Amino acid sequence: MMSQYGPLVRLSVPGAPVVVATSNADHVRQVMTATLHDPRRHFFLSLKKVRDETPGNYFQGRAGLLPENGAEWWRVRSRVQAPLLQPRSVSRYLPMVDQVAVTFMDRLEGCLSADRQVPDDFLGELYKWALECVGLVALDRSLGCLGPSLPSDHPSVSMIHHINEIFGAVNDTEHGMHSWQHHNKSKAYQRLEHSHNAFLKLAAKCIDESRASLATGKRPVHGTVPTGNSSCTVSGRAGHDGRTVMQTLLETDGLSTSDVATILLDMLIAGVDTTAHCAAFTLYLLARNPSKQRKLQMLIDQELGNQEDGGSLTTENLTRLPYITHILKESLRLFPITTGTNRLLTEDLELSGYRIPAGTLVFGCMTQMSRDERYFRDASQFIPERWERSRPHGPIHPYASLPFSHGKRMCIGKRIAEQEIYTLLVRVLQRYDVTFNSTEEMKVQTQVVLKPDIRLAFKFTHRK
Image 1 (tube, rainbow, N blue to C red):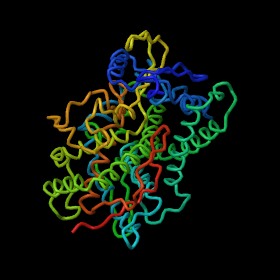
Image 2 (image 1 turned 90 degrees about the horizontal axis):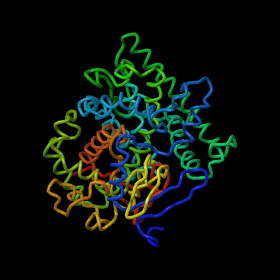
Image 3 (image 1 turned 120 degrees about the horizontal axis):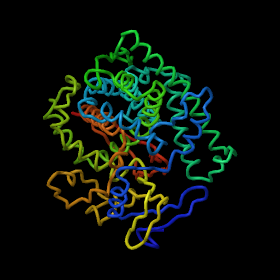
Image 4 (image 1 turned 90 degrees about the vertical axis):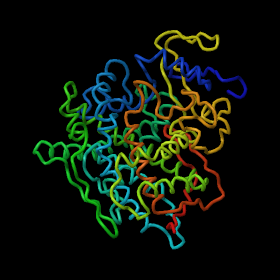
């Protein structure tokens, strides 16, 4: 539509507000500025309905940060920003996340074929890594995702399955006919309801166990993650001012036990597909651009030495590796995790001479803007150096690539996800040269969370 009509188009979607979509970064700036103090989204409404109707009144009429808006959203958001977004708070989990990355490397070594190919379900392995990482932060415990031969009915495997199903069902309910809003449960809504409630049953048990450990003074919970050749013990106090994230939230005025459980539940749901897919896209781009991969390996060697897994990563190590930050930004530009960001206007707004009335949902198409030559020179190329402070490849519009959204509604798990991916990249490239053993170009399945739509034909060869 934008190719035919220009960068601003109007969509009428049955059962939803009128949508105005834009691929103009200046429009996105205007929208973000106009909604700065009350950033409302119109999404995850089906998830809110499922939670409002969950048996046992588990959520007590409060659906959490993902679907809520207005005063209820800000009541929770304002109280969780410090433990989840402050760099000092997040960095205290780095030693544990690093141990998980090393354990994942050991597991991966046992999964590779004789010619060093990853298994067909390598994305599934990345899901396990991501869930293990987010479990440490949200619950301060190992979920056992990296055990040597996980049965298909292992709780962590079931949790990953239900997370995948939740995102798929949300995609179908939100983008399809909204008949489910009128007591006519569509098949997609029934899938969402089933997977959400099944996941809730598994996650609530973990949350209750971790909370009980804190109550008895046994904090944090210690977990051992077995691998084929070693074991990784996960321990140590972490979180905001020495407390775990869960402990900090439970001791925060204005948050009920139900609020805390919902926050932790959303961390588990939102921290698996997003992080795993981002890691897959980034490894793909490095495999397709060996000169960039070698540059990062050289910088890692200079910072950490040549020996494999020599000591734990520190925040100082990562601070001295700015190139890894540029790599992730460039990966998220080329393969953002969502198609864009949206805001519901609370007052009229003029965009390029058009009056957009209050109540309209304005959608900024990041997948369009982030590959647009107007905003990025050589936009189809993987050039991490473009993000250097001097901007050697030309200026970058600050609203042309917003993979974590912007302002008060910026993704609450941004720093946690970045730390996990940085750590994985360091440990992978410290040990392996990564190639992609296929001529097929990356294709993306468009849904709530963009997903690789080809087999991840990676080959991991020991560095010489």
